[in-house]
Image (cartoon, rainbow over all chains, first blue to last red; front, side, top):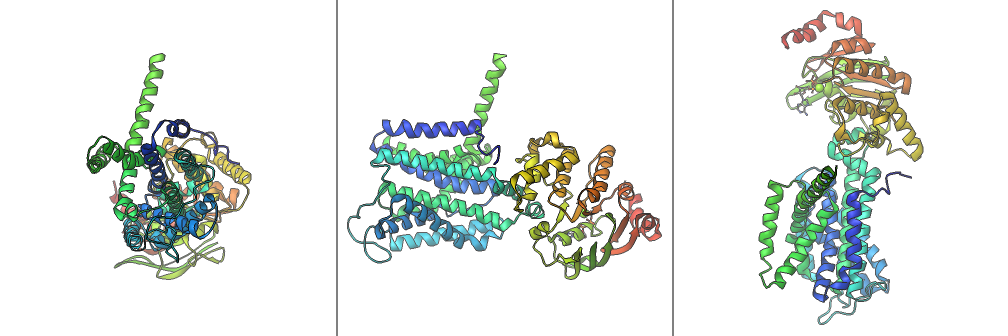
Length: 331
Length: 239
Ligand SMILES: Nc1ncnc2c1ncn2[C@@H]1O[C@H](COP(=O)(O)OP(=O)(O)OP(=O)(O)O)[C@@H](O)[C@H]1O
Ligand SMILES: [Mg+2]
């Protein structure tokens, strides 16, 4: 129906190209250490895409994205041990449950502007951290919380993807679908409403846009992606640890999304690479992985001072200049 | 018909509108007055951005003050602001289409209507441009096109000619005069350009310090000595 809905931009081609590379080449050439790190990075790419999208489109700051991932992972594990649903059913149900939990946590703040959402989501992240560390994640035990002492029962991964290499491919496909989901929204009526809301809420209302509804919608998408990424992370490890979902991690993912470049798909990838791959590299080189925090801090300063569009903005800008110089030289 | 009845607005100690009443019946009506007179505040009350302490606003008999701002737009209210409200990252087309997104009409019908109104304002050939590439006048025209789609009943312009050249103001005046014939909507225009008001508005409301000091046919109002003292008096002081 929409002529431009399926138009692929150059950056879009680059994204599809990277996805194809991560699907076809990466899983075949890396060992098990890097398979697990890259899978985790792909999961966090999806979570980062949610916060980044909300920040870039509406200026909304959510500081509970990793906490919401925890909810998604919890629901997926709970469903896995309680029922015999296939992985995909658990994935969808966990994503929806996370979306709803996100709304419940944030609804009072969605009507308000500016810092309130950030503060409310930060408190939510703190609350979730306490719940996760108190009750832990289901591992096959009995009762509602489903926790038992000792080793976890087996987790049913997707039937389509047996083994870690296939699972990385599976996650790459899901992350790509997540990006397409966001981009589709951006190109249709919600994207128009969001663009006008960002211009000015008064102008949006005057144009008939229900501002609270569309903000809630955006928050719902971020929650959906967090829930799906939490499920995918659970599927990668077969179990989850509460240490993964502490509230500083949510702040970190938000900050890295800004460093990466919130308005580009590449920004979310950069954020996840910094968050997961960089510590993995430092580890492999025998350097203390806490050095990553120093690098994050430098990256944030760099973004604040010289790169308002983040690292992705600089990469695209650099490529753009290179292309135009090439063209200029050829003529 | 637009009925404004006893509208009272206070901002802390400031009385921005002091029981203002007016019954607009002309296709195009003007609202004038010196800076800070309460013109924009009146439009904000009608749009729902400012809450009146007392009073009523009726648009063709329908009580508007009970509706949320976006619902007023659904019921046929359109407005532009002193500053244009064009999203830089949307095309001209999408900037207008957004106004129709709440309706359940088919996509093709909406697209056709957007194109028709872009044609009216003279932007049909620039429909695919993004907002960031537009000139000031083109942005203003996009605002006007957005006000025309979706069967408006009341269109309000807040200083639409601000920053425009003489020819551009003339073109804008023609467009405003055409709105009633094109859509059936009534139009309210705020502007400091008295020439523009005299040309396009059959009736005019004059505000000063939140009070109505005159209301009626534009020629009579502009000839009113009280208006000359209040409004034109400040014109002389201003450079
Ligand atoms: N949101 C607000 N809070 C406090 N005071 C306000 C607010 N909006 C307007 N006012 C005050 O109300 C009075 C009327 O302002 P308004 O903007 O309606 O004037 P105006 O007639 O549109 O003037 P101008 O020609 O300068 O646009 C002014 O004294 C202004 O300072
Ligand atoms: Mg004003």
